[in-house]
Structures are given as structure tokens and as C-alpha cells.
Image (tube, rainbow, N blue to C red; front, side):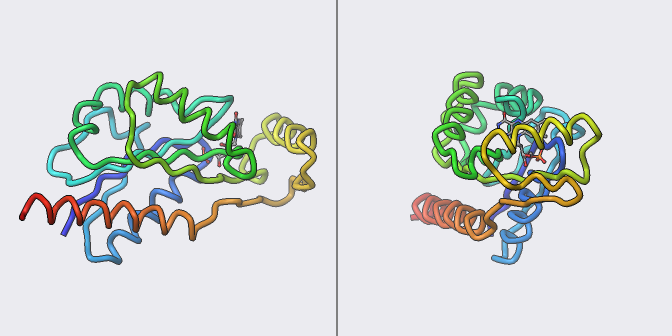
Length: 183
Ligand SMILES: Cc1cc2nc3c(=O)[nH]c(=O)nc-3n(C[C@H](O)[C@H](O)[C@H](O)COP(=O)(O)O)c2cc1C
């Protein structure tokens, strides 16, 4: 049985949902998993975990600064343990190159080169946004040629099957490593 830590950053909550989904899935495979909202959890990586999945979302071209700080501070531990990065953005919904660019920037900022990277589409949560954010996001969406501009509803683009496959691949990699260590 493995014990996985899933620290995350989120602004509107979609990355929190993805982190909780991954944790539930890991538990359903008979392992342990704990999520931590890094805005409140501080920047220490607790001891005792067998693997770490860091998740963060993109706003104005950057992942949360407190996630960047966490990764910078714990880089050597993230390099020692099996670890992965999950990046949540709108670009991951159809603009892969841009989505990859955010991850490259994050790698440059932190110096961390995660061996597993998941790029997942987030959500347009119009009903959660304040007045200005709602109209800015509607304009950006319209300018991109998308029809998803009804601000009385939310649009969730996250492909949960992709999140499931990514998490199960990570677990499979971890199992292989643990088997090699025991051999
Ligand atoms: C104010 C704002 C700025 C955003 N900027 C970007 C951006 O620069 N690039 C991008 O791909 N997505 C951008 N997004 C989309 C978010 O990444 C997406 O909504 C994601 O689901 C947010 O995750 P969270 O709810 O965990 O914070 C932006 C969203 C908002 C509300």
C-alpha cells in the first residue's frame, strides 16, 4: 500500500476538485491519499509519503505563486520521491502548445523537472465569479471564438477519464518502483 500526498493550488476550486478526485481514486485502489490546499497548509512537505502529486491552476499565464514557492522549497524531496505535476488551465482545452508553455515556465521558475506531467482542462465557473471577472472571462472566451458565453451557467471542460488514466499510470509506476526496491 502506498501513501500519496496531493498538495494543490486553486483560485476558483476546479483544481481542488481534481485533487479530491485523484485522492478518492487512489483510495479506491486500496492506497492512502491526502490532499492539502497549499494556500492554508504552509510550504512544508510532510514526511512519510511514498509519492507526491503537485496540482496547480493557471491564471494570467502563471501557476499560483504559493505553489511555485512550495516546489522551490521542497525540490530535493520532490526529486527523491516519485512525483508528478498536474497543470489545470483553459489552454489545455484545445491549445496544447500554450498549456505546455505554462508548464515550461513553471519548470524554469522552480528548477523542478517532474517526470510525469498531466495537462488538464479546467472550467469556466461564471456563476462563481464576481462581476468584473465574469465579464472579462466572457470577453476572452468570445474573442477566442467560443460559444461558451452564457454567464448564467458554468462550463466544465475537465476530462475525468484523462485524470483517472493519469492517476492510475502514476500508481502503476509507483508499484513498479516499489517492486524493484524490494527485489
Ligand atoms: C481571471 C482568470 C484568468 C485566467 N487566465 C488563464 C490563462 O492565462 N491561461 C489559461 O489557459 N487559463 C486561464 N484561466 C482559466 C483557468 O485556468 C481555469 O478557469 C481553471 O479551471 C482554474 O482553476 P481553479 O478553479 O483551480 O483556480 C483563467 C481563469 C480566470 C478566472
